[in-house]
Length: 94
Image (cartoon, rainbow, N blue to C red; front, side):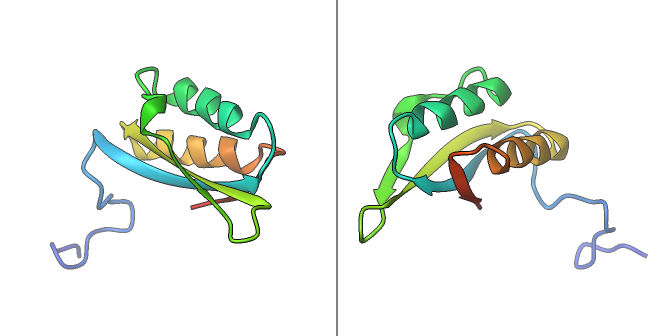
């Protein structure tokens, strides 16, 4: 039995469409930000690259990238995470 406090397992706590932040970390290298931007635009054609937030690791070896996408469904988010996670330049996706 599902209630407001205990939604069914397949129910989403996210109301679509919405702005959804995704954090990506990879080794700081030429082309990383471009690759992430390209992937973001595949899933959100109106993605605004000027909203990207960058943060270098303390030692400068890694780069954290935060993107905000217009999420339209759980399936879209799952596919974005899969695509980002399998990119060779990406180490972590949150």
